[in-house]
Image 1 (cartoon, rainbow, N blue to C red):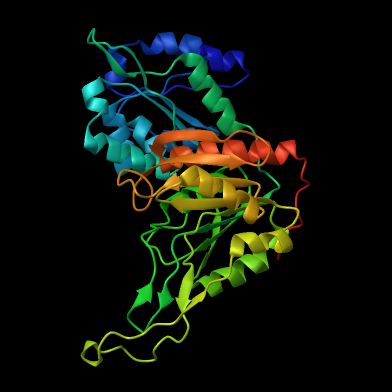
Image 2: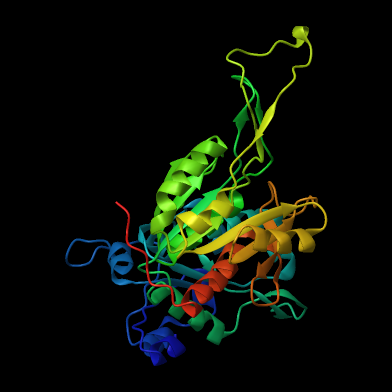
Length: 385
């Protein structure tokens, strides 16, 4: 709190009941220069408004530090049984949380599920880090250092680095009909593309998401267009790409489609049908004509020869960046909540991002994309209607 005030922030503090066992409210009043909110019963002030509503309206950012396993679970489940959690429920701005707990608690599947829920809602997690724990043991679960927490707060409060930009993201598979009930497709879940679209919106960009057939909620602040077939995806990308500053082709577009889909269900009694296939359009390569001024990012899902194939595609398709991942691995890629990628660039060595949750990978990738946009001094594209 003192470091935040040193950086020019006005700070108010709210305590959970457990926190009062560790630090006296008077100490925090001295540090913040403001009364400390506490207690499980919410009182109304003189205006008739509830104090937790007033606190939520006053704040530009909510920082939870330390964030215990119990507090994180209550936040993920939407529980409100004290001043801190009811304020969090009433708060609509950015949230930064600094988890702190024993290493065995941090590794529990239930907690990790709550963390994924919070990440999907845009909560910025800082840490934990490995180090000495309250138990005297050493492990993962120590709260992040104060400078790192302060830096995360400043990052979330400053204007987004993509404010004024327009970002187009494609996500998910395409389904190419064989007959009314069967299709050619792939195992893409769309999770990576949706995480990328969510990150673009969080950074202030006007964000379009062209999504194949997936069962995922639309990220906050994202304009979503649903498609099924590759030709539909091509049509939407061709319409939107000319006014985009950044195009991220994360969709796993089917390479081929049946030339003549059957109008009625094919019957197995008639034997195996002969299915003539036609190539689907290469949408990434076409972006050179549709969006010549945009930063163009492609994705490559490979099972072998990843580096050679990604390098070839980077040049052949005219992309500025090519994000490649190994989909032969069961622990990352298609259907997984985590991914590991290698990003190829035209004029520099590839950048490797080790295995991590797709929401965190999206943030790291957009750090690279934003840096590339700034480096090439691309002017914002005109907004589409």
